[in-house]
Length: 150
Image 1 (cartoon, rainbow, N blue to C red):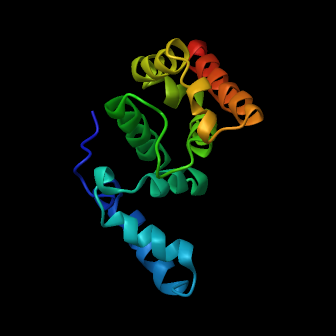
Image 2 (cartoon, rainbow, N blue to C red; image 1 turned 45 degrees about the vertical axis):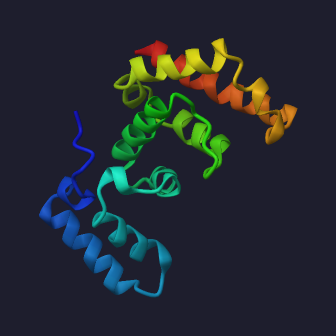
């Protein structure tokens, strides 16, 4: 089990962390290296949902971000959040390797069952168009197939 209260820095080897610092110093005028350094000071549980998605997008702390997103979905008992793009979150989760997703199989199975059994996609009429619902269901299907593979 991953300790969600640890800072991201604690998950890095000393050399990796020093590389992050040097990168932020060398490219201090660029947002990405500075952001990368800033998030290393935060605990996994303190990262915003946007930062978690950005970690996957940037291939930074990808395993940890995947774990945290799945934990939050499981805790909230819904994959829909008001403060992030749920479509992008599912897209990012569906892009994760089958091995990584399978490590969280029981929670993902519970999420998928919740979405499908309770027709949550159909209840998303307020903010999701029909084509987006199909895309969202496609991401759910990709995740289902990936966790079935392993």
